[in-house]
Length: 416
Image (cartoon, rainbow, N blue to C red; front, top):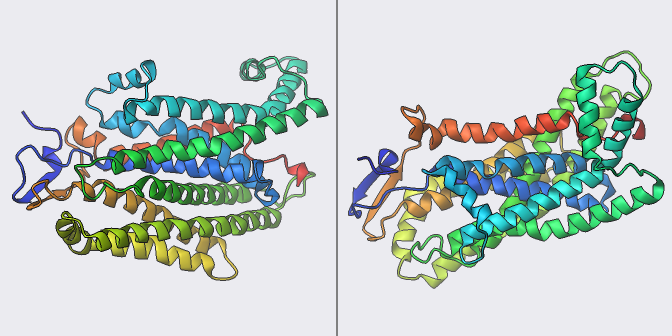
């Protein structure tokens, strides 16, 4: 009988017979996805909580994207589990005696907060659409279904007076304020799980949750900016050259896009400074304390994983985009390159933690190599391989496209 992990694990020197790389690319994807969720929500909260009006356009966009990412966040774990049907036990039997079990409580609470905030943000839109469709005669089947959907989404709250909308704004501010620590906790707990594994010298550090949170905010902001650019470019190309009232021209759309990206890039650089500093501080701390396990960790960090850690993660994924974003007169093309590199750097950080932490044997005398399955030859190598990871990346955008049909991610153009 083939052991889980045996097919993609290569052993070198003295490795215990029961040691394999059990946590594959899906466990890399899990903290990566939850990090995107937290970062996108924090970005939307900068407008709702702190009143940064320049991010108003980005706030709606990132809030809806955060919700789509949140629904897709547990998928890597479901792909990784050999018995995925048992995953629902986490929600049916919540308790705090296990870090994994606590996930059910945190995830459910965060889901309720984000869903409630979206409802308050779009309540006026739901009511307006429901009333418009109600007054329309000879509705088509699609319009009748939309009328039913919007009527349900109003939850019976049809009051859109100024007083009612002002209370909605207060509720949004409170939910966004409460959601920030919950979002950080949602991702910090992923770092907590790694940092509390005493048997693994690479993971065992109290800085791990904080490092995860900071890199999460960085990756979430970067993905929102990148997605925003893609959507705005598509929107700009669809604009007709003919004049139409309340329709933005291509130049106006490009102007709004560049302004939002430039302002958001400043916050991205701000959080990148903390993320990079914490990661380097952790490395210096390990070298300075030089515990017994440092001998083999040093061989992994400065030897076998030097390319992954110092070249791909720190140089390509951190320093290069950091320098590109700091250069004056940021352009959309330079922003796209920088954001792709930032996302790559955060992904490599997750990879180096999850895969790198399993690269050495607990005997401290052997190593294990992980070979990512590219071409699947059975269900296991599909779920735990490159195709399975690609599916995880596509799902949130399918949800985002679906949500965009009923939740307009941009303000009406006549408000610009």
